[in-house]
Structures are given as structure tokens and as C-alpha cells.
Image 1 (cartoon, rainbow, N blue to C red):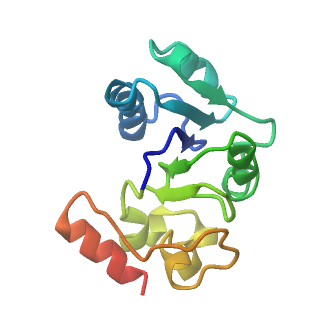
Image 2: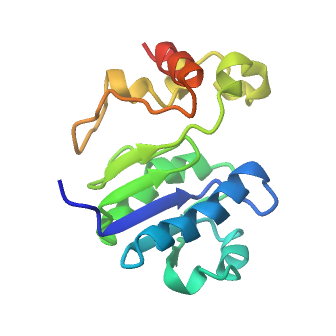
Length: 173
């Protein structure tokens, strides 16, 4: 298996001042570039967060990609599910890493999804009422019955701890 030459990072969810996930992104990018200086990185970002990321010391080494339909209020998740896959395909991304639990329904890239926390699974009332109690909101639900896969999905889960992995993956079945 060859190493990917072009990685896309889906951080459409990111708004300035988010805290933990923003810190994670700001550390992830320079570390990826440090490991693979020849790596091409496309960072898919909403228009509000773009100026803050453009000021980062590593910004000249990556492509900050946005689109008018990407990350708009009230339709952010929908744009990640639809528009983002098209943008990643146009840029010929090999791997698309979605850091905020939502990935495109369809893309030619290998898709990796990070689930940063599980509070919405264990305490659904902390999540918007629209999604409470809906099993289909699980980022793992596609592992059991993909709807429009462009590539086979792997039924695997990597967790930051054995406990988190066991709890999150067992909830998907």
C-alpha cells in the first residue's frame, strides 16, 4: 500500500475559539508537515474560520479550501455530507480525514472520521432536540449499512482508549 500524497482535513465544523478541537487542529497540521514535508494538505474550512487559520505559521504550506455553500449556519452538516465530497474529489484527495464526526456520504478518497467525544451518545439531551434519540446520527451507523458507498467501508474503530473504543463501537451495532 502506498503512502497518500494528498490528505484533506475536514474542519468545516471549526469556529474560532472552540477550545480543544481548535487546539488539536492547530497542532495536527504542523506535525503532519513535520513528518512528511512533501505531503500535500488541503484543509476544508468554513469562511468564518479561514482568516484565523490563514494567520498560522504553517498556512503557506497548505491549501485552505472553502466554498460559499460550505459550513453555512443551519446547513453545516448537510454541506459536509454533500458539497465536501465533491470538493475533495475535484482536488484529487487520497485520504479525507473528517475531524468533527461528519464525513461526506460520497467521495473517491479513503475516508477517516474522528469522533472527539461521546457525550451526545451518553447524554442525548446535550445535543439539539432534532437529533435526540435518532440512532442514525451515530457516525458509526454507516459501518453496518452504507447507503451510497463509493469505496468499501472498513468495520474498524480506533479509540484514544480501550474503554472509549469499546463503548463507541458497541453502540453502533
